[in-house]
Length: 146
Length: 146
Image (cartoon, rainbow over all chains, first blue to last red; front, side, top):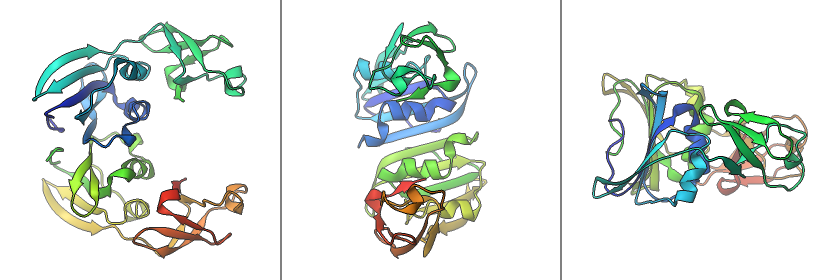
């Protein structure tokens, strides 16, 4: 264990290492005052290289956690109280994504007018998003978080 | 200790917690394949809230480390081999800063032409930078890393 246990709070495990900073950005962890520990490029049989985040004394709403689906589709979230896991949650990719992601088509209306992005998820394993407006596909490699 | 010891590599301690992500950005840690652990919002008598970074199997050049001066002026860097500290370095703010920082004056030539920024450091404790071109002062609060 390179990052020690926490007494109370949230542990997010099985984040793909390359997307750790995207998860931090989505959850706005740079604005949280609680103690946070991160480990990245840890070995994982499933993911190759994984990251883990432990946030003391912070419990996220499901709506906030669901925002990380796109960049950490197989993340596991544990809520901890008194060093014990009191709730487990597996993050799942939803069918529709509203906001959060940017359409990769520079000509898409969402990139030059004040329109909230909207995508249908056409692949959940290697995330691919089809834009509701221009129908272009934004995939994991081109995914930018707004 | 919320972040465990490393066998070989670099430990950067006494980073002001609010600037952890700026240090990560300056050192381009998101592109490093080594194991990295971070702790933030840890208690520090000197800094209020501090952050620490431990990077396994990575030794930075002094020129790279000096780039964090601006956002972590009192950081302490230890080089570790076989769990032992083999070199200590205290980061110091230089007198002249070239590149790295953005001038906060929107009318400054460096913000609309392809000119590398250049500042003289007028205060080292609470970093304040005087632009070589427009003479406006950019302080810690307005400091943006390029």
